Picture: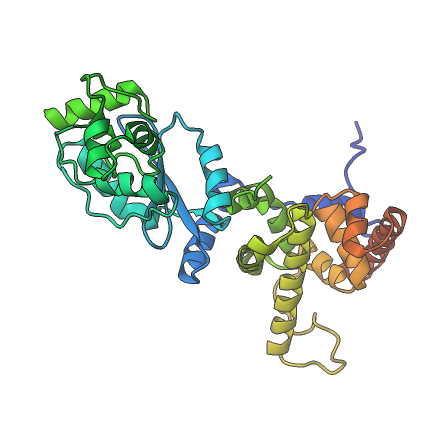
Length: 216
Length: 160
């Protein structure tokens, strides 16, 4: 049988230029891992050149995969898997900067401290946090959350009083629900005054587990 | 609608840009050109029009970066008598893709853009036309002329 599709090797007839274009120019070594390596290098250069508005990484945790994102100032967003991470990245592109790349190094410290926290080897976070996503009253509330000690809880009413607006219980609840940096800013330590646990962005079950972890 | 995170731009278009760079440069240089392309794109990204054709935008940047690198490399090389022959100072082994890259470098700007955008980056002629500021028919013609010239040059330069 004579092969019909093979280019002539007699030197008189060249293989079709188009064929050569598509075969020769198709990068053979450019699998996903090759491009990942190029992308990692790109992120490092972007960071060096001050072009990386938001650096993010994915972090495995006992509560599922977390998205940790940081500006040059500090951790700007932490998201549980229950929030669609792609949606969160889209929001960050709109609200912080579209110059976003996966670059774990910037959140190495945050990740290490979170790991320690989950392993009960850390009670307080010592990290720069960028609260640019919260403004006004909500910012006051979120800033105050860090004052609630590890292993204790506060009620929405107490928190409202603490920020100087005892009637704003509902607004305090809403501020906690919109905390952009949960875990590190411990909104899970705020519960209902009737003793029930209250809502949590990462799910009520997660909130219960976190309080149990801190109580142990 | 808001801006797409740049990470998605890289994952969506990274392979295409690498193909363009590999079409114009040898692999190591192509990696550098890829990085230069995305670094320049990242710098300009916040100002990019929301309805811009991102693939076309990146192909243009990539082609410029590659052309710059070829120029830089040729300047660094020892000048040859006729000042045009870049092949003479290039002692890398003659592989078919190196021959084809050289042939590609001899195309006119329009032909090169059309061939790269359509045949390498896979852009439809309607989008290539926007890139060239012309009609789809004219874009198709430029690509066809480019391929015809490539075929002729490639045959000429082919060893043996």
